[in-house]
Amino acid sequence: MADLQLKSHRFRNEREASWRRLDSLMTKVERQSVDSLTDEQLLEIPVLYRSAMSSLSVARSISLDQGAATYLENLCLRAYLFVYGVRSTPLERLARFFREDWPRAVQSIWRETLLAALLFAIGAVAAFVLTSQDPDWFYSVMPGGMSQGRDPATSTEALRATLYHDEGTSGLTGFAAFLFTHNAQVAIFAFALGFAFGLPTALLMIYNGLGLGALMALFVSRGLGLELAGWLMIHGVTEIFAITLAGGAGFRIGRAILAPGDRPRVEAAAEAGRTAALAMAGVVVMLMCAGLLEGFGRQLITLDAARFAIAGATAVIWGLYFYLPRRRTP
Amino acid sequence: MSLADGARRTDERALITPEGVDLRVRVAGPGERLAALMIDAALIIGIMIVGLLLCLGAGWVMGFRNAEFLFVLVVVGGFLLRNGWFIAFELTPYAATPGKRATGLRVAARNGGRLTAGAILARNGMRELELFLPLTMVFGGGGEGVDGWMYLFGVVWAGVFALFPLFNRDHLRVGDLVAGTWVVHAPKVTLLRDMVDDQPVLHEDFAFTLAQLDAYGVKELHVLEDVLRKADRKVMAAVAERIRAKVGWTAAAYETDRPFLQAYYTAVRGRLETRMLLGRRKRDKFDRD
Image (tube, rainbow over all chains, first blue to last red; front, side):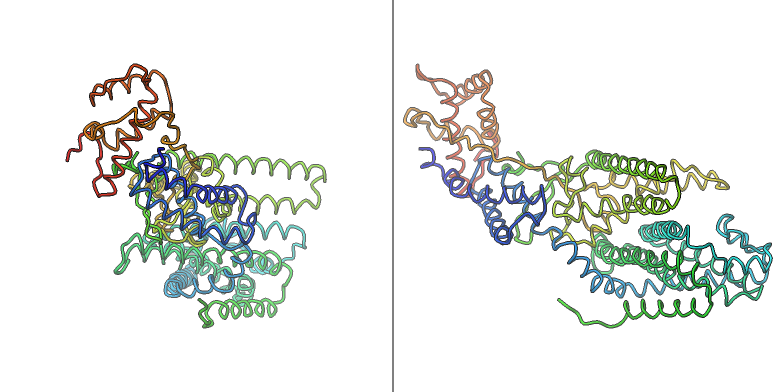
């Protein structure tokens, strides 16, 4: 009898089966994964989702049945989170990332990258000039542990040895792994620091430049400049580029917060954050390459020419990969 | 229930889907967020300890010769756990780490649009600043040669990021802000039975007048629905007594409380729903025409 009387009750009886169907599909997706659904089921979800959404709108305007309303709100939210959630399989996403997302993100932060590179260069040049004039500066610029026995007190011969010593192949994989994780952590940090208006990121970039400049000045003063360049650049091209990109990504967020333009600050920050994070994910990949080059390449290849060749090749490859104009795919 | 009577809970926010429907999500509070984080941290640390012990055990068996790949495993595994745990789990369709899943929370895009991989990467990249930096500050101490004031400045500065979620309306952390995401409640709700469904009595026995039906509004109707659902004999008796007194209903000799309440519930709901269709929503009993 009641169902003859109440529209809301009739409405619920008619729609309930499709709600339950959507519910069971959602439960399956949430417990297992998208792969647990057949193609037909996947196609069914958007249809059921829209019908549940319309049910929710109707229920809000005609029904006072609390159970149905609460349930529908929850069901719609769950379906919404799935329908508009992160989609595509991990492999597809990975392919898309390397083909498109990453280079595009790097391209879009080119101004900030330039700024980061400039700061790095300023740090390097400043440290180089200062240390060349007065070797004592070396100690102020390089923290104790970082120079690893390469300081003005070391003899030229010992310095030369540090560039070419062959440790044998043992210990290299561990070394590479350590370098990679350490550098990646620093890069992620530089990115995160961008939030504080990019100021700490700027300091970090200059600081990194200082170390390079001081080391360079020391080796140049002993006539080992070219050799050091080969030793550094074989992995340094990739590593410094990666750190610069991380700095650029940080600046991008800082800029969006400082000068959001005509959009709300929060919105600008969110968009910048997403772009910068994509570039950042790539930076971690680059640092992995750099770690391998540093751990293996540098210890195994001791010929200057070969080192420079690899350095040049990496520079060209990264440059073309990132900045070569590419077609826009929708 | 906020849903029906328009009085919103303080943690409820509008989330307009691309279809134009407001889903009214509930944002997660700092306490729940912290609980989720603690569960994740416990899992990560647990896995790290077990992994480390396994590697040590394997190394011991092999006599620590040529055991370098174990070192690589520990270093890279630690890095992946620290940075990859949150990202990997939030990239799944459920968009939640085990900790969030256990507390019924999920990550969603704040503007109602699609949650992108970039957003997940951004919100977790910021963790470095919000979580690991303050932790190193607090547990690492100042280190050698660091001035006390500098250390204090560092702790305060790091604290700003760590405590950020306490000082904004939606309890966003810096990562959420930068990624355009938030964390919402999305536990599974089961469909409760419609209380109109069990009507054992004939309606002719209960002919209420319009005045009797207009005594209450939506709020009271929902309270009555809960009372019927719980079906506690004492509560039903008390409620039935109150209603009879209020609307001036004289009980027939054979009338019991539950059928009376059910009939009254159905009748009031029909009355309120009809008026709702015509554009008049009576919030509660004080809502006079």
